[in-house]
Image (cartoon, rainbow, N blue to C red; front, side, top):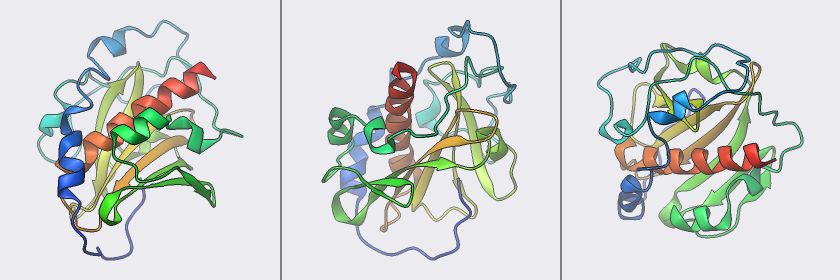
Length: 203
């Protein structure tokens, strides 16, 4: 999750992303947090309470943040574009294949929107309780994912930060110039981060 420095640009993507709101159901469940049996390697937050504002409705199917990550998921040398399978890219409305530019894999979405997959240089837990971001910790596949956006919120982007190691995180960002709102954008980010986690675990 990065602090925004520029202003929003304007194009409509609400129709593209509105259909994504139901794609996350079943991707992560409350049982995910209990399914981890490997030796813990870190201690993310254990509370699922949001750090800013009421808990969004699209997080209802997710369990509380796990007590620790099941195992480290190193990102050195990982092909970020391959973390988003073609079927998932199509599911979220990618208008073309991912393109790696300066350590970020970007997928174009319709009407000026984009999906970015990149390595964040800090632990994901840093975004819980941060004064500059809204950070909602949840469990996805037994791992901590912090869902949020920059504050103040202008509805133009949503982040899903996967707890990979104690030094970095996998950051999935969905941005839409028309600012359709986080309710439209965050389910897409969650769908992609869950798919990327599966790819990382598969090696």
